Amino acid sequence: MTDAPEGLIFLPLGGSGEIGMNFNLYGHGGQWLVVDLGVSFGDDTMPGVEVFMGDPEFIAQRREKLLGIVLTHAHEDHLGAVSHLWPRLRCPVYATPFAAALLRHKLGEANLLGEVEVREIPQGTRFRLGPFDIELVTVTHSLPEPNALALRTPEGLIVHTGDWKLDPAPITGPRADLAAMARLGAEGVRAVVGDSTNIFVRGSSGSESAVREHLIEMFGRFRGRIAVACFATNVARLGSIAAAAGAHGREVALVGRSLERIDSIARSLGFLDGAPSFVDVEEAAYLPRESVVYLCTGSQGEPRAALSRIAAGDHPQVRLQAGDAAIFSSRIIPGNERAIHRLHDQLVRQGVEVVTEKAEFVHVSGHPARDEIAELYRLLKPRLVVPVHGERRHLEEHARFARELGVPETVVIENGDMLRLAPGAPEIVDRVPTGRLGVDGLRLRPLDSSVFQARRRMARDGGAVVTLVLDAGGRMVAPPQVAALGLVDGADDDATRAALVTAVREAIEGMAPESLRDDETVREAARLSVRRHLGAEMGKRPRTEVHLVRV
Image (cartoon, rainbow, N blue to C red; front, side):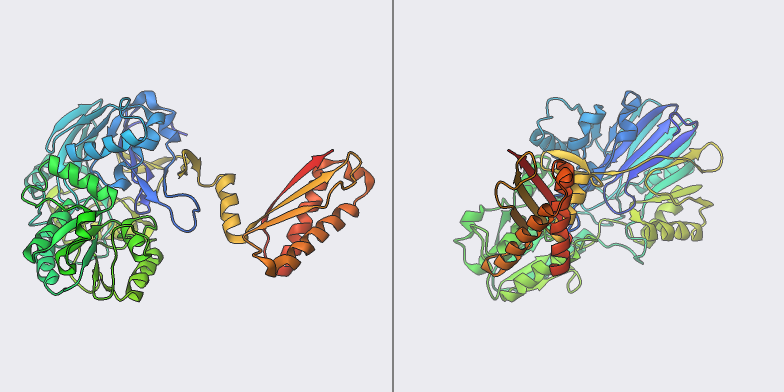
């Protein structure tokens, strides 16, 4: 593995070949810079894992050469891993005030607030870290203070776009700084490392102001309660929902702790100036149905989020009923389709009208469509485009589109590819081992660890535990005990339990005397007897543990 490659290096450890989990390294002269450190969210294939992130082993081994972590914005897939991985990196973190406030909250939950040096940098700031002269360039996105990074180095100027779009009428913050983009283009951009999320979407992504106008019109159609689910960090959407509610004499109650936290941070930084205060959820329960809007977490079908609990009838303060409406003011993140559709179905069964972006103009993406990407490249005039933030199909299409726009060079890479951007032609000079770490309670574990493999296997095939009590010679002192977890249920399966006990007994009694004195041989015989019986009867091969006690 190359330890200190020559030239200017780009190395993604997450977010290239996938959407989410952004974790990027830039290197020059043996020194390294991390750009974004985010998470992705677990699904049904990862029992017990709510979030996972890229393995930082490569840069952790070189942390004495790590200059810092620069965050482009406050989304979880760009900063959510900092509180988990910082103890292995131990460097300053640079973020704008909104991202810094969210990060401090996470660090407080992880008992790291007093340890991590968080340096606030206003939008438009230019500062230096080692060989990197860094300028924050204002863009628009679906939360406050998003930034592209202009990285000036001895080998040339790189623009790392982060998540961006060109909203002509943003609600929170200024429009994208197109003058700065043109200035960078005139200076000479060696490479753009760019967002590929919406590369298949033609036209433009649309404006948040247009969504606000439609929400105001649409709220007037409903006569019952309105529940709206959106991403908590979409502060502009919070303001739009408040405006739509106010236009029709409704009060808004926040349902979900993350929304309450974002509301507090956004108001403290002035992003919700002019928006009325939200009412307490308990107070909203006493309002007439036609006078309340519930703004809820859970737009992605998260089982413990507010809207999922409401749909299940499990929320202590909020109920929906026939004649009410639930508006999903967000897009479906790939991988969440099943959970969201289950939530939709639960609500519809209760007579709740479900409204999504497919039926109404209730959401615009925070990522650029093709016209916006074309405009960016017209301004920046890059010699090279490196697509990131997308699955392989997104990256390949982004590269093809960039060449169609006249960009001379494109390179498609994935996590672990060490790409030399300059000097000379771009070249993959090494391959770095990559992995994923899952948050398992209070621990981080590799997703390919034996623990997660066993858990996935148990989720699929169940588990069995056998307890044997033998004397020194191998004679059974008590009948075998067999627990078949996730495989047998109630009195109807008493025959199966009895058959398992018989299978274990027969396997042990059929062993040679010398084998009965070897613990591992006895355990394996009991384990195989259970697996064979359940395989023949149920078609299952459960993970089986044997506890052997000698007396």
